[in-house]
Image 1: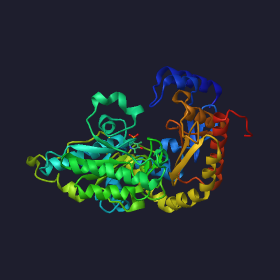
Image 2: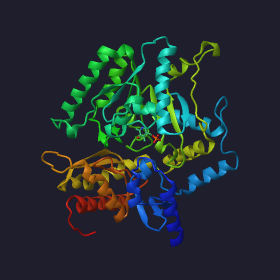
Image 3: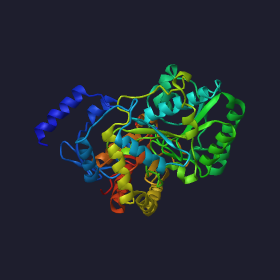
Image 4: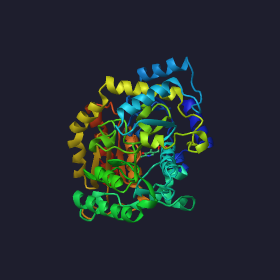
Length: 455
Ligand SMILES: *Cc1c(COP(=O)(O)O)cnc(C)c1O
């Protein structure tokens, strides 16, 4: 990319583009245009190279420009790119559905495709709602969600979301759902996982006892809340939530859009506690970070509640134009093949163990309050005062400033408020992981301590 081309693109990007989750005034001050990717690196239009420290917002598995994935798409391209899934199937969509059923918790037997995490969640909500309607339980219409939960940006997904910064403004557009506390140990007055967990379970059961007859389903992010601030559930919490749902006849929807596909060191986060949800959503890592395909998986019992003569009016009237896209399903299949070939899940398990001490050592810094996570899904919470856990004033945008500094030092990521996000591609090896953590450490020091350090 020559310099002239860069200037021209910069001009055009400022003139024509509106970016998601972005205050465009910030972008205009710190613009960046990616031109290429190779392995765990991104390259911008000026030729600068960066580590992809958050897997292009939690997607990438095998690195960018992967030959095997590229070739799979090329081969499919010679056959067909897309045909509709409305009323007819296609070859890669059928084969991928079989694979997904084999890999996912054993309760899940059916695959409904869409094209993003948010649409997979919309489908989960409508499916749960209609399941009870079709079965004749017309009062079961409501949902339970967890504080700080994030399930995407469409109106239904926002209705079960609970991140005030993103969701509060839209309240007049949303349907009501019950919100239960999420076990955020670091910010719980006891700071003790067990105490925090029991308290949250108690609150959940209280709502279930009095309202289960009107509740269709509970939705949560299993093991790790992502956008709410990279918050890990205390051990055992998820399986207790699953038992409570069963006890009160409420469907369990686990949103594995972020945690699925090896991110936490198992195929799915549910696998850590052998939880078998009624509905599960997947997207992000499903195509290795290549193309927009998502899926909502469910049980045979739910599927059967929709299966009848047309006149019985039980059909699930939902779909998207690009549902089951052949190129996308093909690359998802190749992605899964590479997982097996390259032992990606094992890589996440072993490498995350090796780097645990250097992540833990970030806590020595005067403004790092908490470091938490599992597998390659890690959050680093910055605070003004470690003793009192007092946050930095939000206007200082410390997480954002640190992330800009990381960019200068050669790594891209995006914070959630003052929680830094470390989610490298799943094939990243120890040496690069250490280098990435080193960049994060330097950036934290330079910005929060405003002190010069060796880089
Ligand atoms: C990212 C995310 C979504 C939304 O997925 P999109 O593909 O961005 O619509 C939903 N749920 C969770 C848990 C996510 O992390």
